[in-house]
Image (cartoon, rainbow, N blue to C red; front, side, top):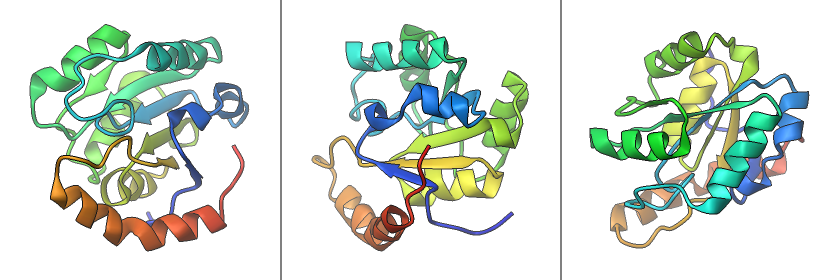
Length: 169
């Protein structure tokens, strides 16, 4: 396992991730952060764009799996149930166990798995430590928590470096 803070792919939002391209790369399982990746903090259920994107993933043989650090058990469960996808809440990213548990639960290997998230120190570091493809998106909304501004400011150099070496999916 390598220690890397650089994502394999960088985009503006989940909607820039092409399900056909993921499938073409052999990805069968897409782990996804919830808050600020799939939906803004506090939004209880997926909107139509997220539902449509998940349906496209499914049509291309890619299972969406929510892997969230949110500490409120009902948050991840409600969102996942509304979307009809599996989840692990309070996942403890960037630690490996939740990544491994999700892959085992879905019968997928590291090569068949990717993670998409908005945070480098949880989603990207965790995905790199777990040996899966890492996809970094911009946070949906920073407003509301001064700590988020600081965290994203610290991540900024790594976002720039990852964009420069951006791989195609």
